[in-house]
Length: 290
Image 1 (cartoon, rainbow, N blue to C red):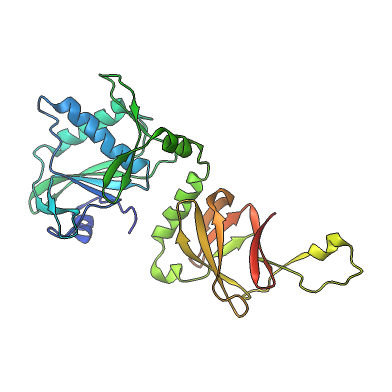
Image 2: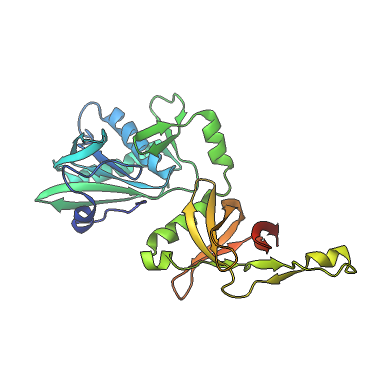
């Protein structure tokens, strides 16, 4: 399961089972942020790190007011609903720390409070950011931190990872595909996707008298000849499985850099606008510039 914001008690009950729900790449539990005590500066930096880790990965939710324990798998699990004393004050403090400790301070987030069993909780919902989000301790001014999230918690990026993230021009396309794919139900995901331009077929039989340039003549493949289904969303590319009478189970990998547009069709299918064309030559597939 990917990023799924928690906005209210119903969302909480669907996602969180006390004693079972574990932290993940998309979810973190916090007993509290000590925002009204003497160590609140360190707490502010910690809050900024928590937000940045999700913004720099695939999004996630921080649930404040949840005690944690260790589950059988070794991961942290929600052990009890502790609650927070002043949810409105806490949200105001969180917003202030985001504005002063994160760059850009306009990072997208949605902080809400709601009650579970009569106790107030605060959820910080953080969508993935196209731009790299940095943590800057404005009081100490001792450098900038870049974090990301794994199934086991937050990690710090090294300089090479920061550079790759900054140079990753295909991240926006990846996030756009993921956002739409997560919203589709199982039935829609099981249907063939729409490709623009459509799959083409390269002629298999050539007249030897044809000029070389005509031997690569491309025509659109008949409807239903190869039905593309999205199999997997990887870190750098998406995998499309071609199946049909003559192309059962052939896998085509398309880098996100080639995805120019993504949308949902009127019949609830994922559609991808590509800067390349998927071409079938005999039983094999390859990518060619449009």
